[in-house]
Image (cartoon, rainbow, N blue to C red):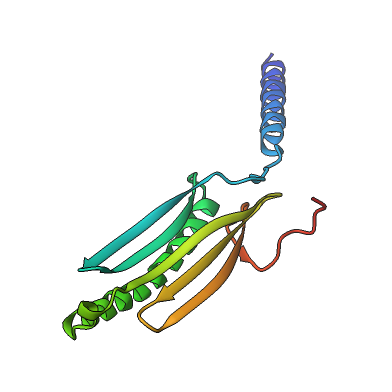
Length: 168
């Protein structure tokens, strides 16, 4: 009788543990799909100073992906670092403006100084997103413009130089 009970208990445990492993295996083998398209917002950050008819305007458009995954957080951190770099231009712009104000140049001139960075999404599919930043800077004789492209892979947040070669 003891052997029979032990044998039944042994079969019961093996059968249920085996079923549990099969169930866990089914759950564990679900494919993980990276988002193929990102959802995002573009926040416009701006500041302006005026004196008589002159002004200095700073503008930066900061895209931020929606979501809380590790990849989204990594991409948003990278995009914010681009904004942080632009704060040097903002500081220089307002320093020039204040210098022109102090030395009387703004009393004689009607200057519109600026530092702007506009952002446009130009690709958002197949698991990648591309933003193009167009920057212009003018401070009374000094003018610069630049275009920078950033591409991110959505599944892991890696910044890359190429989009996937997928027929569009």
